[in-house]
Image (cartoon, rainbow, N blue to C red):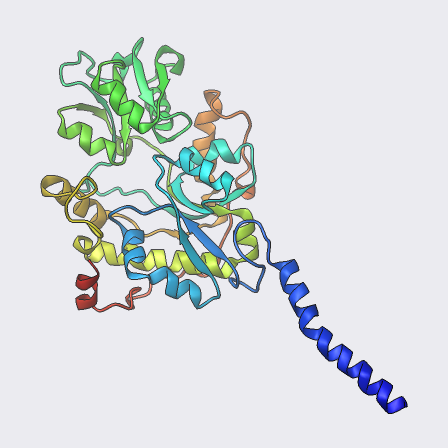
Length: 362
């Protein structure tokens, strides 16, 4: 009888083991910011905005590079929608559609002043080579009587609110000795700014990124470039705080791949243009293509964040605080995360595809 009862208990225990494992797995499955908790990267989901038709991430998406490299640490990637600005991407971060995003220090500060949801894990040093194409500028119509920053007193200037355009305008006014209150800042996103400038509703506009070469090509005259100023607004990569804390290996892997691909783009920029489409509204050609290739050749490789980068955060925040753009000060120690690793970019190609396979994929 004892042997029968003992065998019965063993059988019941054995049958219960799979159910216990299933219960534990279900309890661990729902975590904010992407994925089941795991050592380093296991279970992580890197959620990115759509990279468009050019650049390292467009190339990575076409070749499936991140899928393979993140898979090696138990993580995966999800590609999301397109967003017109860092601010719009932040809305996607709030909704959970994106958890890793690119931008600059300036637009990130407004969010970081009120939230600890994201942290900066990578900075990219500014391009200083004189022969490199400019990437932003304070522009006026060709017929404008405005000839210098000093002539902007009493004028209306379009800038992206709390972003790079507003930061650079405030810095330019400070350098020229003009109180910021003597120039009216009109807060518009890049699309609205382009329209307001084209229709004469503003006297000047600080055009950035893709808007800058387009407006210059249409005849706008440049008063000053960001590169002419002692600016500290570096490009950054940021991620949801819980993703960095729970899945550091996944974040490091993403940064490693990004660094490798940016280095490859510097060496062979033509491969990273018109990645998906060679014709159409997202494709570039002629002088515009030549300029994008030159920009890619001169760009700097993103690097892992370090606490010393707090000087850049403090400098940009200081300009905003002086002019009432930020509601409160920001402690850089609370917004910078050091992802570790991330030495020199690997000389090995990030893509497993051969040149022939790459051409076929296009």
